[in-house]
Length: 351
Image (cartoon, rainbow, N blue to C red):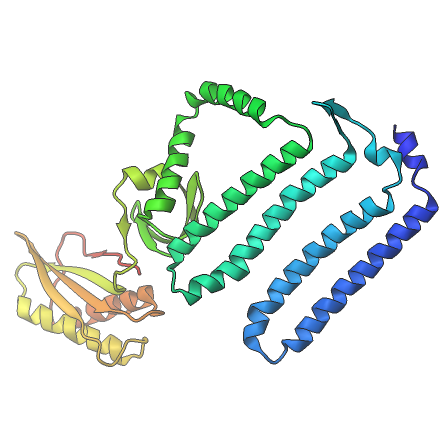
């Protein structure tokens, strides 16, 4: 068969295919150049229209090349050579290429729809980010299932028989894949019930991060300092998750002093330490007021907590570090002794 296929690739066919391909690619380049020139002075168009046109043009060129290939070699017998027959339908390379194009085209079109069209609609009607993400995933899965069904039918696969086979396999695998099934169901619950949403800040195992993506099996959480977590969806349904989205950012320092020290004097020095840090221009607002509290009384120590409200973008670690240095200096200058127990414990309160 390979010899037959190679013989049918005549020089005329190859030359015509190459020429048509070059013309299509040049037209795509000209279109992208024209759009970029027209949108050069409009930043809004550069952020919305230009990327959409570029993406659509690239994929249109790809599918155009495939269509040109099918058209230029449509008179070649190998393209319609039956690979196998199913229910009276001869499955040929032509049908396989068409089935592949259906699936990939559906995938690309739904991506373009959700990224460039539906996002604008959501913004116009003030649909929150989490609900929009749920709609996008439902549309994607629905379209892809339909595309797969159409492609299977195109190549002669009986969907009813395929469903029966999958059901039998599913029963066998169900016992060994209970966790995957539980995570799958949990993913559907999260998408509909929305206990957490994309863009929210959550705390997992004393690590704080932002939810980036919710899939049917797992959720991606990008941590503030230590990379990314891939969390099974079942965890969000069964465990207690702390949602820190609405929490105001703050820097917190806990200090333990000897029980023989004057608590009012310690409180005054902690306020003075905060004023020193604020005057050093660490990005704190001029009207920022620190909260100093005596939070715990022990036999040999007193515990104080200093909380400083932060603005978005403030360097929390930098402010806490500077506060520690100033507190140590002021305590030494004024004869305040730290407790002989652990000196200090940082309480993390990330946004």
